[in-house]
Image 1 (cartoon, rainbow, N blue to C red):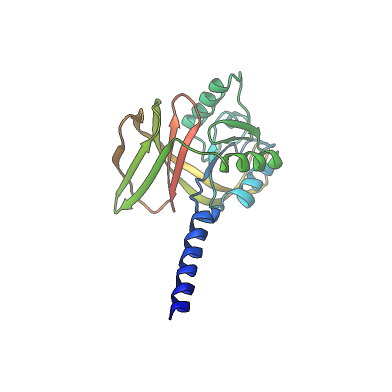
Image 2: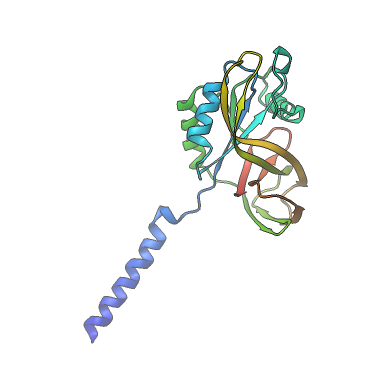
Length: 236
């Protein structure tokens, strides 16, 4: 009888120790990788392919493709481009002290800028950001046509809450321009981006946002004016 009690106690202590020590149980905050691309850019297909095959399906990465419009004049109008996405890229460039923008570009967690055809550098940045911490805790839930966003912060700063929707994949037949004759696959194509709230982190955040349709939903909490992304969450 005494031996059995000892075995049970030892097992319980071992289980408790494993639950406290195991890093697998720690919450991993996904890293946001934004791709700035264009269907009219001849340099973009390799970056689009890497984004599609290696990034778009990962759970530890929230991959978002923002199609820009500044190459539309050379023969093919990107069907997914939006001037607002071009403006977002320009905002990042100003924040980083860059004088121009380019495609393909990837921006990791709103902070690190890298050429989209350099996958080794992108992977290295993802690994670095996965090890980082955030001053913001975020949770999102959906009930019908309402998205509930809750967040708390351990420090105060001017931040914005962004809600993004994307289309998971689409093949596009390019008829004109630099990629004429090619059929290209695009992934995680942003079609809706809205800043729904300004927040300074002083008080806990709780807000509802109306949503429709079954496209994935991403919420970013990001410092103003092209600053770093503190945290992100997704509902597929």
